[in-house]
View 1 (tube, helix red, strand yellow):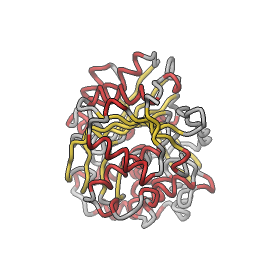
View 2 (cartoon, rainbow, N blue to C red; view 1 turned 135 degrees about the vertical axis):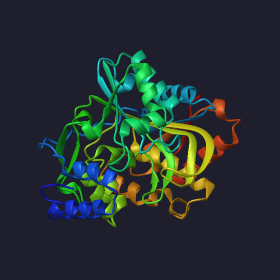
View 3 (cartoon, rainbow, N blue to C red; view 1 turned 60 degrees about the vertical axis):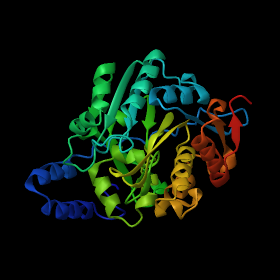
Length: 366
């Protein structure tokens, strides 16, 4: 939403609705909510140039790598290697910003696994990244992001590895015009740290969500938009399509989907959790979500996912309209790991992705 033009209407609507919500909160919660809703959304800046997906095969198809491992750190390294390594992303000498999922202090899969974050930071260090920043903004405005990330173990990893932590709530903000491509928002305000990132990496998890149906690569960036945008989105009946619109300021170079554990019903904080030992990596956020949706759909526990085809999800449909990734399965290729053929869940998941998402399999040994 533009704070100057609103949800195609005056900005006072969002502020007024937010203020109404504040009235029913405790005083302890109301103060930070009011502070965040009223924070300056920042100056208007040029929209970022869309980045091409650098992870493609010789036929031009976007690559998605898939592996399985009981150790998250090993799984991350293997899936990145299957995808083609970090060399295509050209991280050497760059300021890299990592956006994990840490909406709360709950452990994986409500949040990104600490082992996954550490493996990514170590890989970036080995490949010569100039600076590594981990940024996040947890849950409702009264949440303390550092406290939540201490609870789920992510802040300990940041401190141990020498990366730098940025709480987006305390960052400077800039306002990005979304133009006519956005259905509901004229602009979105995002942290300057994300806007100025030279390389951007996302670490979503596989989980269902009681409002959005599911939360993975597309919804990950909702944690990087201004609280007023977030309030207005939650209040809209077009919430799922807005989540895709709010991806327009973000062009990640690499996404790694943490499926060490998957939240197959409920969410985003609590629900039925299954150990799945799955890891996916891609430069295509739509393709990655199709893989995660196929995992969730296979368990048949969450009607918002089980009752729809993976391409029928509103987040996916809107993201494809906006050309945020592939628009059909044949534009992608699934790089699978022959070392995981003995794992029944892995092979079942690969079959589901090829069938439900229409993504052809390309074995790493072929």
